[in-house]
Length: 89
Image (tube, rainbow, N blue to C red; front, side):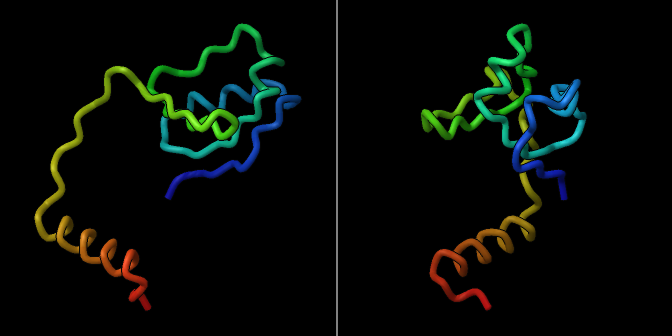
């Protein structure tokens, strides 16, 4: 699992340090965070889903992930199909 921070407080000192964590995360960043830190730049490997503008920004160069092993791939596809059909218990 990875950390989830629903809302990163702009008033928290050094809050931007959380955005350079070497682990996957989901962090809610309010627009006021950017205005409070005018010199801050989002790390290049971060995906940003802007909920205000409904835009997704992603890295220009992404690391290619290896293919999933066949058994795990089939299992994931089966579970996704179950969920999409509403038959998951």
